Image (cartoon, rainbow over all chains, first blue to last red; front, side, top):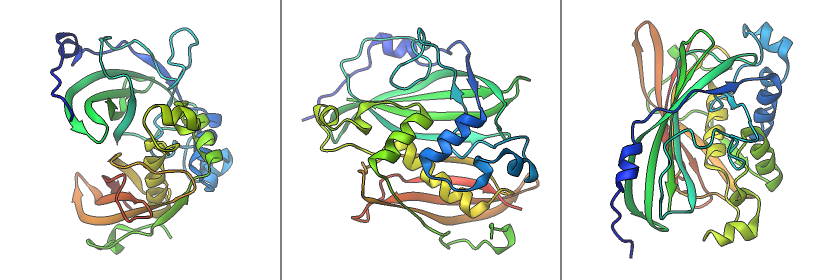
Length: 162
Length: 138
């Protein structure tokens, strides 16, 4: 049976702390790679001239892709390619990981050529019993800003450790 | 043809999108998304974490739902808000059917908006990635 788990003081202290900004890019190559991964055949995600003829600055970002975190071999997470250690770190008994879900709000069209910065913070942490034992649900909110500082998207993701 | 606000009816389903991932597609997705977690391509690793099989990335199912919405709204429509949660696992070489049901259409701040319930369904008919979306239509 799943046991009750109480958040540690370290975990509670991590909630709400905002990370330093991390650079993100959208490039024609990243849009095409993402579109191939999903299986799109729409030329809007592959052919820049066609995208421009449809009124876009360049290849537009396909749904769910906001931008790609710029990879730094010293500072990025090698498994997930995003920033590592920019949020407060804490000890946790849960070592295994699943993705719980994601929601994104879009405030502007994002296209190849855009350079964004993102900041993240943990907004919620709670444990509950799940299929694989006691699970810790962590919600992280990431805010993406464009070069002018305008918020272009906010993404809320839930990770599950167990 | 892309959806037009005036033609949309509450309570109707939008065209479904049927997907079926090969392991090759999961690797292409790993490269495109930057998610190289081994549970999505390394069977012994997946089993060592308590899973029965390689699993399809939750974010890929989310992106499939995005592909269904894109096919429906075309390039003139815009996704305003869109999310789903990953409630059940899906596996390679099995059908994943994306569904969308129009729950509400309304005008707000000069925009013509449509809310949908969206989900992916596995071969047993279980909703493995339920969520909601709001789109703006011409």
